[in-house]
Image (tube, rainbow, N blue to C red; front, side):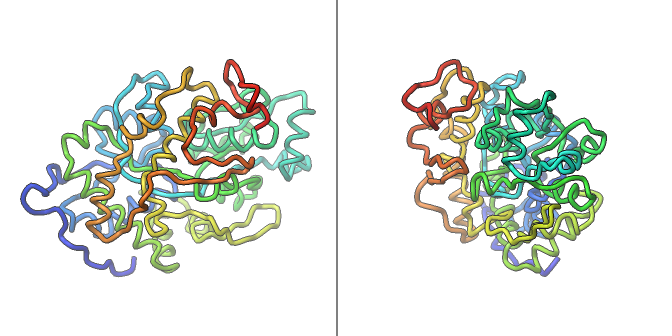
Length: 403
């Protein structure tokens, strides 16, 4: 790595000192764990009084269980995993959770198999025709039932007129095992985080049909998650942890050279255990889809973006709850804003950001237009959740049935 600039000795004196100084931090082998790896290994945690012990997990369910048991103090988390645990979705009981910061925007992909490619299914229109004309259902993999990849897959399929719960089968596969399942013919496509989509393309195992940023430019993705009990017991530690990882996020995006060095670091056996050629191009925003198309994506993986990728917007959290409701994971509408205010640690994040000179947006909501033309701004979450043409709700308000 390049030389790390020294950080101020923040929160180390008096009552601001971290209550717990050695932390076990869970992560999955994905490119968007980069800020945690850099913070832990390149000198960003020590100035804030912390030692970060990275613990690679083999599945999102295992990572969740580690957080709930206390084996992990905090983790690289799917947004939807954190909220599912908080809301008690998935059979593990409700546990109050906390989102300390966002770790990234963008950088996930939907890939299809070589078999579909050979049948001429090379674009969304061809996939829609195939799904509705074929006798057998296709099977798509995502990484966790309430996770971001399930939500991107469902949203994208629905935007193409394919009902993700009726027209295709959906199965859960850990990220690093996608290619194995694809090669064995157990799945026809998948939605996953990098580098596993690029890895499949580089091995000639199908192609990238859509990126997640084409669904929602600058969408929320992974977060730094923990339990509310951890934040209440160790508030100074939680703040110091955010400062450390936020500083690492900023460093990675200071130059293409820093991204290059980060990709080299991530390729090691302890982290992603895959060649830098699978990691770096898409980390730099450079895509080859396996169909002969190459482009630089203006909304590629963003780990900082002047803090905009890290700010825990209330509206980002609320969006995932609207999709839980849309697809029947929630049987009733929650208090969308109330729940988001419970989980998103806005005050703690602002304090941590101020300690290292990262600016914060003034508003806790943001407005975005998604692939189907809908605008999400958090102003009417119930109306939004109930307003889609394709859904798994018991009833559909006629006034909004066209969305």
